[in-house]
Image 1 (spheres, one colour):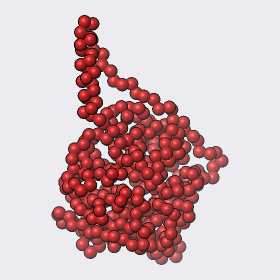
Image 2: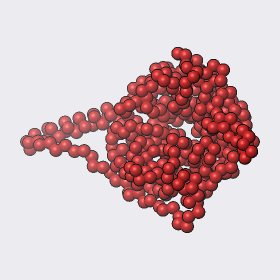
Image 3: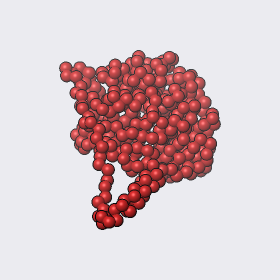
Image 4: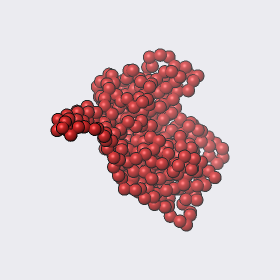
Length: 387
């Protein structure tokens, strides 16, 4: 059974999707040490221990307490997203090897609705729109959309003509395959920025294209479209931004510190947008990494590029938080040229984040193998209940 069949089965079945009740969030017990103290010394030692504990908390504001509020889930979390901190979705396995499922929540994770999604390629994006609907990119030329409160999925119709007036915050992606019509005539080349209008249940190319073959595209929280790719003339990495749904683009070709091999693939590992036109893009080819940041209308390269950074979050204050393997955190603040060490973000504990996204309705959502967090600002996080 392929993903298309599963969505048809979901939409035509006689039984509604089941509700999954998440148990009431409970507090994990605070770790306690049993210390044997002679009765005659208790009045002296206990105030000292209390003072030491207070100092330890003050020195480590990240803490594990917020993560410990919700124990690790039995779910295996592969991808998360949503519209805002209440309307969320998660691609999960309810247990290792149990098969993939799409779960959605409209109350911040207190309860979840289940949709069976077998044989899904989880590396393909799942996107959200300002209306709160979901678009599932089954493959570059097959997109399923749901605009009825996260319920029924229908096939989005491809239209060769450009999407002239999409619904607000309609999601975007890069088509990586040529598209042929019923007469086997090519009507679209690979590397095209596409817009998915979930409310219209259709998709098509942006009115104009950036001056390069697109490798990645994303709708920024400020409503602009960001695209990243490779300049066709020089083979150098490039990025572009559109504030009018793809009618015009502001493009930038970057100058890597070392020459790239035009015969080898160039990979976009991160493409992040924030308010006020801020953006971050990271490219990789072999051992080379290029990290570029846009602020105040200008792009600049950040060094060191920190290839060791596993994950980036572009917070609402436009500070770029980087997490390295092992959980060490650094930050690049607006206008700064370097990354500086910082404490663990509040609410994350010692967990390593595998991925995060800015939500079109405000806030952020992040995950690892068995945790999900939401954040109002991208700096402080709160664990979400799972099944």
